[in-house]
Length: 498
Ligand code: GDG
Image (cartoon, rainbow, N blue to C red):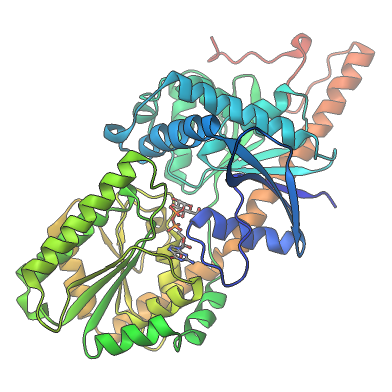
């Protein structure tokens, strides 16, 4: 059986019980632990000069990590990945900047990581690359002769073409993405944006079976919504209810209602708007004053990127202002905790609360929304208030779906959630649990890897057919849907590809 090689910017060897914030790490590690394999990427260390990879084995997973130099880190990670691609892909062109040097660094690091990975690859390995840091990774591998199946999954949203075109090297990036054999997105809307870019730009065409022919390659594109393991989360939430932070919050809350939010501290998560909508609830429905608290857990990330420093300051200011306006001697409206908690403790905190308040301005999926639902007591579940701009909204129709730019609508949804009758809460929760079980993390992984294996089997058959045709100097008809570079003699020239 072929090995699975996972590649992501940051390798996070999460030991049980150690806190780790970040959806990619959670999803990838859970998926990899079941199949076994290799996880390759950055160690998180800044080094003086590039050294060879370090190896660490834990159970059936081998972690292979490399350091980045300060220049690589500044240009590839802090620069093009997180100050250009992240804001633009989250529709924040106002926060995005472009720098040619940073882009050159982004390409250089992708090429260097590809070169280092190549030395570890066996011919039948399957490579699964994750996220926006590595858009040109397959192109870099192909450039140095790697022919293994390579798939890509984008964890964040894919923007509409007009938005994408604000990133100056957009065409080069998308062309590079077409070197993957399968490109997966969180939602159908994201996938459609990618196809729109290709088709409207005249770079290729899409067929009904999900195959895309573009830039003289063929690849499969599709939506593979990432999931969780809802039953394992439900169990953890129940088992961790006697942990210190949970008992402390239960005691402090007493008869009060709790609204719970957990996010990495990021401007895409809509924290400021969320605080302001909660303020609106307290102002417009004064009966809730003293009766409900918002607990916001927000572990800091990317704190050396300037826009992240600014969001932190703004948020601290807003929490202080709103608390100053409404607090009473024995009641603080917003508890804002700028730190990480153990994962299972978070699930128990979700279970303790009556409302899950998840309102990103834009989000690929948002696992917190799914975790909140899974953590609830089915007999007395809390209500999820969820942004329409989270990928999860496509899958959780039992939530109260809100527009995070409409503070009044959000405040109304909070009021409705806080007083929703038990029958309705149970029905909504049961509906969402059915959805979560039907689309759990193993379905995500198996659907993606199944497609990658299928596409690559067809590809190698096609490659053999091309070789035979070359040897016999006969033009054999080739299957249309296969991702392989054809030799010039039998090259297919798209009518769109001028
Ligand atoms: C990206 C995409 C997509 C949070 N605080 C703590 C903690 N967390 C955990 C949560 C959850 C994960 O981190 C966050 O995942 P999200 O999906 O909500 O968001 P991103 O980190 O932005 O993830 C996102 C995801 O990738 C997966 O594809 O859904 O759209 O942006 O699991 O529980 N975990 C611990 N302590 C914390 O304080 N242990």
